[in-house]
Amino acid sequence: MTSIDLIIFDCDGVLVDSEIIASEVEAELLTESGYPISTEEMAERFAGMTWRNTLLAIEKEADIPLSASLIGKNEAILDKRLADDLKIIDGVKPMLAQIKLPHCICSNSTSARLAMMLAKVGIKDHFGKHIYSARDLGEDKVKPKPDIFLHGAKQFGIDPSRVLVIEDSVHGIHGAIAAGMRVVGFTGASHTYPSHADKLTEAGAETVISRMSALPGVIAALSEWSESLTA
Image (tube, rainbow, N blue to C red; front, side, top):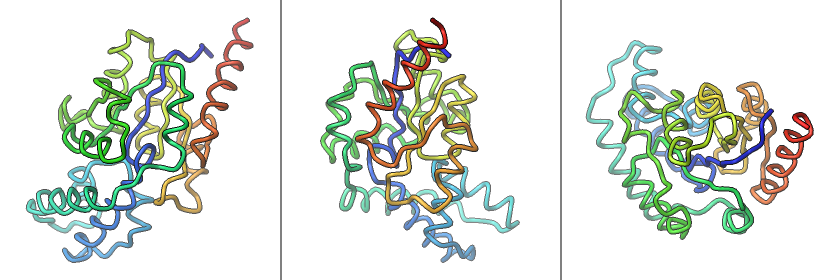
């Protein structure tokens, strides 16, 4: 194990409590379109995936055509819900104030939505220019592919093996592991479910936390463990 020199945060479900809102909107649209699914199942199966890739996965699984208009319809409804109802994850601001290592955001959300959400909860300025969207790299570069994580590390000139990622989804963890990074799982958002922590651990998270207040201590502990192994 190498030391930790950079922290990469996912955004949705890690810094802002948006995954539950997305799951509610998407479950309703899919149910109306002939694919009945609950908000809970939506969150468990598809959190961390883009809406486009979710639709493609469902079309393949259920062999039912889903209208292309669902993409635009979802975006419009979700943007309004997020603008009205989005809240920050408890403990994020105090946690960010304690993090001394360089840190950034790597997300599947669009740059425009990231800017809106982070501004709404008051942490956009904290990250400055270090807010990266996988969509800017291309629709074929989104998580669970590793591209956005590698892009984030490259901006700081830090080797992927020295990066710690904070993720709430299995898909996100798979992307971080594929990038050669270490991962802490997070289950403190409203879309969490009973087997959430187990699934994040199975996906490759070294440990899982449910409160952001625990993160600074976990980072310190993982760093000390790495140093003791290489001493």
